[in-house]
Image (cartoon, helix red, strand yellow):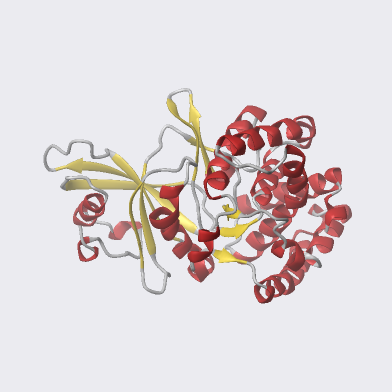
Length: 360
């Protein structure tokens, strides 16, 4: 199907018609005529909105899905502005250009489109129900964490230190100028974060946040001899887990924060933010070991287990980075506040436990 046969971007889920969905599915290789559809919102995205569409067909549509998930730009103008600055384009291009070269489990993408200015986009994705979304506030079990870090190796391993990643102009990477700009913004955002949440940010956590913000530029730029495409926001709300009714063990969504960076940042961010402090302390060496074994199975060589753990220590600052920026640039919600407080507390505690400040 040519580009002209693909559907156009829409403002809202209510603008999606049967003809629009037919074009989207046909662009994904399905011979199907959608006769009717209905939708309902799902998920708790910060920069985009997702909907489940139930589909009915005019005639037999062998292999066509009975339901799909459609992801669109946020209805919030604040969150939409944040996504339009590169996040929406990143997610569309992940599915069209990068995902086919990886082994990380994601929903199959049937259609991915964006407006010229990337302020509007649409993804038509495989519906992974009955999988359930992780809950960042509650955290997860050690068993689920193990599934998640092994899955993460499927993002990092296949393109480990691959110089051709730099040919993808849309894939963000730190420059001295962008890193300095990030640090300047983060220093101000950190003070705003501490002021906003007041006593909910203990003094020892505030000290960690400020210490990192003052060193964010050099931290972000340092690759320690290793790089890959990194998710940037690999956390429970962006993971779908199997239930007793079935499904893949774990699948990853939300690719708006992709960049070229130190792989240990994703690993540290997930384990530092997704486990209780007790579980992390007991199991983090085992879990980092599981991730390292999965990297080796993907063909990564010359990266020792000890080196992997040191990158995990160094990468812990991904937690404060995403937490502070996320809280201060997207629409504020009650659930968002609870989530950011859980993330800040866990990340700062992990940084202290692991002596990560010494590595700055």
